[in-house]
Image (cartoon, rainbow, N blue to C red; front, top):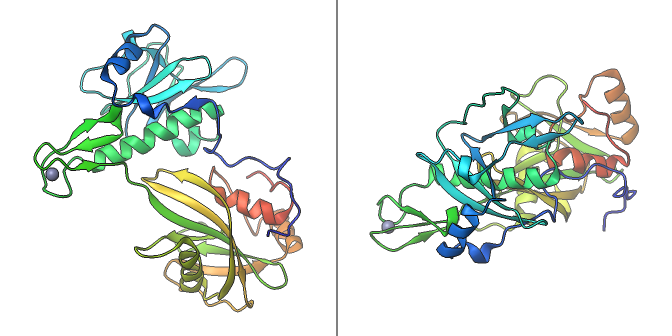
Length: 312
Ligand SMILES: [Zn+2]
């Protein structure tokens, strides 16, 4: 059990993880007649995804929206069409994967990747974008059959690739990675600095799950490899899709048996234990930069910290 103060009512939500808003309606993906009718429907909206980017624009009332268009306006040349789902008003959404984003006559729209747009868009738009970007990343890197080498064809409205030669079906790949806030017996948190990070940037430890490994084993191994810390208890907190290009971040808190640290010097240059007071002082003095961006890392730190972290 997590024994820290519960601030779930007032701390910031984990980006890209909203539930509701969009029903993926996966049962329609193989129904070509339904998909064709959905595509032609006048209320249907679509947007282009290209290289992990979409077009977004700021509204007059201060929000930021995904730029969508009706299907009759869609730039279909050289595009792959992916069905993303249906919203609460019955509007169907499609993404078009293309080699470039469309230009816009009015110039108000701008291209943005998920790291930027994920923090600005509504929950619904962020859900649509993360789905589209994850599919695009997988599609671009898995064009050939991993069993026989033949070029595969897109089926299931973008969610499966099928091999015409050997019949194999290939599904979107997600690579699990663990990310963990480690605490010591005094309740301090371990934050590390990666070798290539700018001065003052500290965050939680993280790493990929290896073949044949449980999530808990991965937490213990990564904490040992990166910081020389021994772990005796691992608790799951939450997950976050992280399609950069294809990860799923699985967030944990992990309890170290002692405060001994031995960084590997390759991935992690420095790791330090912080009490809440020490971290507060380090934020105030600028010695540690508040975490920026949409990563679950900031929410894991905040959960332990017990109050919203200062904004970057
Ligand atoms: Zn094949």
